[in-house]
Amino acid sequence: MQPSQIKHIANKTLSYLIGFVVLICLLVTSVLYLVYKNFFNKVQSVSSALQNLYAGNFYTRLPVDSTDEVGVLNMQFNDLAEQLENFFENSLNFEISDRSSTVNEDFQTVSAEAESDIDVDKTVIINLDKGN
Image (tube, rainbow, N blue to C red; front, side, top):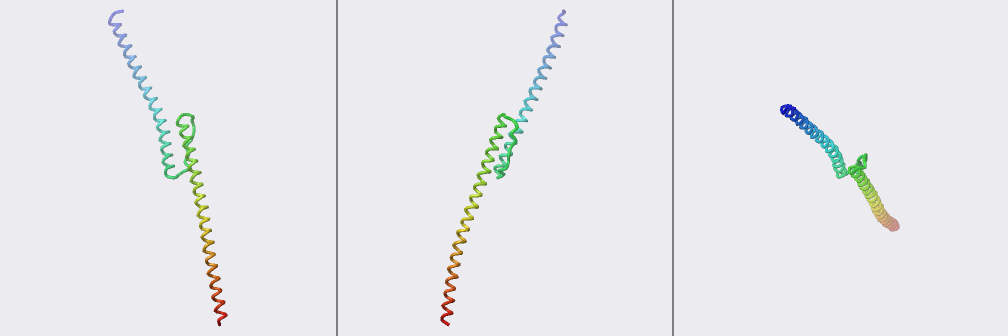
């Protein structure tokens, strides 16, 4: 082989090698982008669900479709949302019950006072009638 042929083969091999390296770099970049985008979308959905939960929508739930870290995070978010939902429902029921008993007590007090006033009025009327 002549030196010009060797140089030509070396240049051709170098061109193929550079093309192969560029192709591998593009492939790795594409895969990393897809993984990043998928992870970012999952984190964005958790963030959106947290904003809903913060706004008072305790019925917000996330789909648990994997067993990786994001799937576990979604499951824990769902557990938290359910606990908050139960807590606020129980608090509301207690508040309603407490206010109902307070209203009932107030009604009993007003009713007893009104009955007492009616008895006094009856006594006054009876005494007036006796005086005539």
